[in-house]
Structure formats: C-alpha cells, structure tokens
Image (cartoon, rainbow, N blue to C red; front, side, top):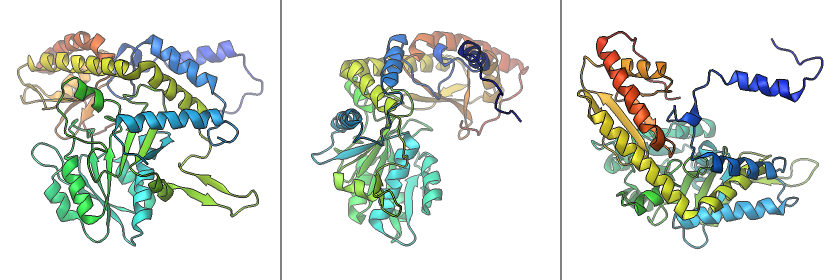
Length: 408
C-alpha cells in the first residue's frame, strides 16, 4: 500500500510522473477511440482550459458569494432551453453529468407522483443509468422490448403502465443504436395517464438541432412535443465542453421543486440545493459558457457536418467488405457487425485493438460500436485502412476473439 511521501516532491518530477502514467492510454487526441471523449481542435481545447482555470477554485454552491457563476449558469440554461424549444416559464439545473441529470429527473417524478410502489416504463435501449437511479431511489424499472426498428414500442409500453407508474422514458437518441424514440407518441401516452415523460438527450441535445439543419430527418423530440416534461442534455458530449457539464431541463420551473432539497436540521441554518452535489466546480460552468458562446450556431453546425462526414466515410468503407454490415441509422452512433461466420467480429476487434484503436464492443447484436465526434472526420481513412488489415487478419484466423458484452 502506498503511503504519503515523507517529503513533498517538485512539480517537474510530478508532471513527468503523470505523463509517464498516460503512456499506455489510448490516444483520444489522435481519434483512436470512439467513446469517452469529444474533441474538435487545439484552439477549442485552449478555450476550455483557460475558461475553466479562470474559475478553477470558485464553488458554484456559493452563488451569493459568486454572483458571476449564477449569471453564467443562468445563461447556459437559457441558451439550452432556447435550442430545445422550451416554452415560457421553463427552467433547468446545471449538473455534473448525464447520470446526475437523469437521477434528478427520476427523483422529481417520484416526488411529484407520491406513489407507494413507483415504477418507470422505458424501452430496453434506454441507458442503464435509469436502472441505477431506480436502484438508489426505490423505483422499479420496467424495460420493454423495442420494435423491429429498434425504437420504442409505444403500445407495449402502454401495456406496462399501471397505477404505480410515475414516468415514461424515451431517448433522443438511444445509445446502443442511435435511434430517436417515438417521443410524440410517448407524449400522448404520458398526457393520457398524467405521467412524467423524460427524454434522454444526453447524446443528442446539442447535436440533434444541427443535424436537422443539415437535412437529417429526425422525429420531433424536444419541448415542441406536448407531454415532454424534462430533458437531459450533456454539454460535455456534443456541446463540446469539458467534463463534467450536463443539464436537466424542465418544462415548468415549478417542477424543480420536486428535486430540491432543503433542511434546517442543524446549527448552521437553512441548506438548500437543486442538485445532488453540494460543492460544484465553478470552472465547469465557466468553460461550458465559454464554449457555447465561442462556437455559436455556426460552430455547432460545423461539428455536426464533420460528424456526418465521418459517418458517411466510415459506413461506406465498412460496406466494401463482404460479410460486414452497418446497422441502419443516421446519427453520431454507428454499429457494424459480421454476417459471415468465417469473419468473426471479435477477431476484427482484437486486430483493431492491436493497431491502437480502443474498440467498444456491442453485445446485441454482436458488433462494434462507434460514437463519432468531429475529430473522426480527420482519421476516418486511417481507421478504414486498419480495418482492411484487421479483416484480412481475422479471415486468416490468427487473432483471438475479443469478447463482447462490456459496454465501458
């Protein structure tokens, strides 16, 4: 077990130790992974870093002490509400990530409903963070099989609703396949039963609006849909901000009271918070604000264009291989699989990994999952060249098969 050093060490040695620790990491800056990171270029990286460092020690819990953070957070929320067509009176909370945003949404749904044995109904493509939130909150998660298009089966979800149901969930898009659920039909179902409808747009919140501007056909998914109660949207995904920065947006500001904690049960007086965190890093808010203001609509549109160019190039290159199939989709998420028993996808994964690509394996169907971001437009041809070599190696049967089933 490592003990605290008796004497402190100088920063140059510590910095080198940190750099040495990273030598075995996959290179996100070279686009060698399609999960965990979102990157445009060094210019935006500098803005992220400098904005964060401008507020690196300020605590966003203390907005009375730091009214600057209250202003910046408010503007971030307002820009997101506008982007997602929220009505007058809508509001939001800045959180540490999608997990916290989803947690707070499920907490608010539970508290609003006040039912003894609550459950939520969702497609089985919904992120497992919902199950994790349910585990914490004493809610039963009900996963319903998706239809042949791998989208929400609204009739089957309706059949799963009962007197204990407090919320419905849809994704825009879902993470396994990149499909946008039938949010309009779910909104009708939610209004029919008086249920909270949460749209998980952690991936799509800052990408969907710009894909639509590029002519990508997406069903309506945001607050334009009657019945949508809340939306989670990660700024640290396609909002291009550094981690951790997400939003929980609600149709009516009054709904925030259902995830607000307040107590005076100690000597210090009243303590109140709308988020799971107490101390909140001011740097995350400042950096998110700076990135959104720097990119603007034109910058986000450019990011979306690069992502779709990468998708088109990679999908076309995969399709050139007999025995490989790209699953249908038109989003930043791309899944491909083998249709040839003589070409195991697990061997391709192993061969790609050996060439320095972090391979994200899909369990159902057995495949390879890519979550593309702007940088992949620059490395798409490099990926396809290594894929060609990986396919040849896999056909020779020399490489062992990488197992599927671990999402992260």
